[in-house]
Image (tube, rainbow, N blue to C red; front, side, top):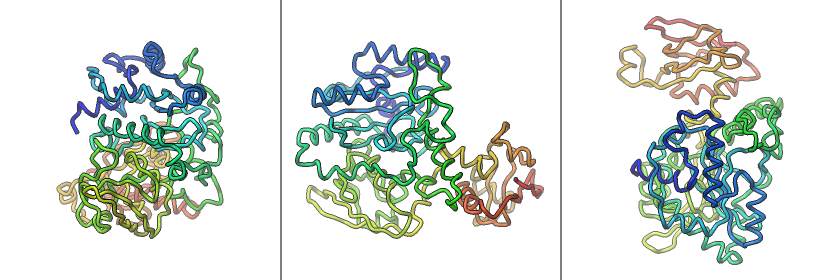
Length: 447
């Protein structure tokens, strides 16, 4: 997908509340204030008022479109300075919805609004009675959206939602599983009730904007991980928190982002390939849940255990319906990459003392004399301030190459070390870390 389409997605979904060319020179408070002014002038949105949105949806019998967008997090979206022309068909579809622009998660009902909190942009569609119709918006990298969303894909998702709304009585039962009100790792009703977020208010005062009072989406994910870590009965952070919302890429599925859920490519010898999925297949149901986007599919995967399991996939192939079985192997969620996630900073604080570890290329391995199957992760960042500075206090430095952790030398990724150390939380208090510093071996103790 071109950069133009990537930017168009963000611009059209947020309509007239894009940040604009001068946003990068504004303070966070100014960004939010200007965003609110722009949205208010458009007359298209309820601003940070979910209750008002649902009330209008009930009154008008229109479906509800809720856009979660963290205004200060411009670095996560990389908008162009130049605003793009609006897509007439998408804007026309938007007007058939009641629209809510939500810029904070303060006070939201976590049993209703369940999505990948590491995103700074997410869309949820609801029937006026509260039934979730679908999700849109995903990401698989800190700055790249090309393989995840598009303006055409959003339009296709909206078209399907409007069709379901028009025929709601016939599809109501099939939509029941698209929302769970009893996820085991949601122990509180709203974000500010998590211990690490208790300092935040239950509502965000737009008349007196103070960004420090705003709970960002990623902070909810961080709070969930911290809560799980603090629970003494939990041996480690559960896999659905460590590897949340698995991306279909780990199954070998590459989607055409201009459609609801049509397969663009299937990786050779992948889980999807072995299941018999092919390019051109249109996934209609995944585990018997109707699908409008990659985000819908990720919701299903997020709920599944990290063990051997088979998922039925209903699809259309050349216009003909058929079903295949997607067999997930044991520990399949660990195939995912979490390095891009903002909530991974909390994991790095907990077990890496504030370090960020990066893979090095093959030529550098050879120069250092490190075998392909051995650990070789360069320290890309060391936290400088408490509580993220334990690695710094231990003597570890940026550009050190980690070659051994607790005597183990077979970690290929940062997440492999994170997961291993999380599992050691009850038995290990000091962590010996061996590094190469300018080619010289050195060992440090991380407390």
